[in-house]
Figure 1 (cartoon, one colour):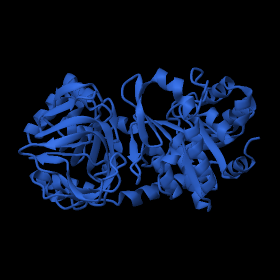
Figure 2: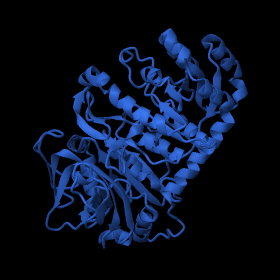
Figure 3: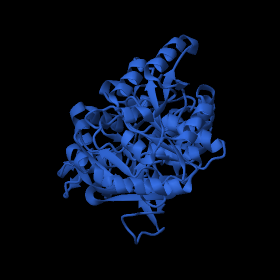
Figure 4: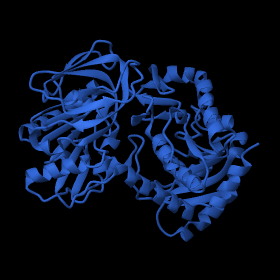
Length: 510
């Protein structure tokens, strides 16, 4: 049986995912077989495994820290919000339906066998399991029948480290208040407190730490610094959206849709010299970018309606008419077409006019396409002709099928590696996406992850502007992520009491 340790937080975005990832990396570096686990994840950023199954990206990132292949065993339940009150429910990597919050809470205890089956399989294969909670364990309205915080800790018999975010202020109230709202059995399971995202001189904090330990009776096992590292974010609480950035020589704008998903597609452009990557949600923020990206979304028709109502669609159409490169991914690609039809009411139902920038019609179907793919960009026209032949690798995850009409040409030639919705799928080559003029669209998430793709786009834009972009080198994104994981582990070793954490891990709970 594996040893387990659980990271819970005082609130969402306290830093649970990152701290869990850092511990995963440290345990791996110390020679242990380690795996991440989160029983229930709510996020719009998801990933398709080699088997064609869907899981949250936070556990993918943590699996990479462990040096192992991502598996849906690490995230047996994924909730993908479709609106303010309902979510698509994915169990063991497959969609079981869309439910209101009330319906899901009424049924979630039925999923405990699925959770424990996945956990026990990891338990039999690894030395250590690092479990991540969700939100806060002290949400009084959610405590009954909990399956992701203290409920999960009890099922796994896992000691808990409780994390508070000092950067937002009120960290002492966060930590003390959370412990007060737990019952005695739950309080006894918290074996350490962590203050996260600290900036400045720690000695100034020491009196507060002493009082925190005195009032809670729980030791502080770390004061983790605010880390400026580039790792993938899980959901729309990401700080990426709020970064203030000077416009670079090459300016890339991502439209921040209300239900934006898989915005990790654009991470390879971050940190490139002379390149700015901006997320814009208002027409006034758009300015004059060289490329406008329309990202994925969990509700294509709803977000297209938002584009219209906000005036963003008109602004994008104007830029397209001026020759600006427009690039859509997944839902963004669907929006660029002429029509979107939803006969099975997968989203809003009915038929909706698209933006009309690509001669493509999309029909939403009842079954989700989930597959990993690889291939190459075709011989392209327009300003991105320089991407012709560049390797493409990633995954598709969508509910629609798009049909190209006269005037549209396929963007890439790809091969499916796994497709859980179609057992007869093979590795035969097929066309993906479409382009016409300077408007491009693809279903492939991660289309710029492969070495050369992001740099190729930037260099093509530079050539259009007459700017020398040879100094803007692309990176092997996977290698870059590995360096970031090592930095994360190095910093946590400096600021966390790893000797005590190992002792907590060894002692477990009764």
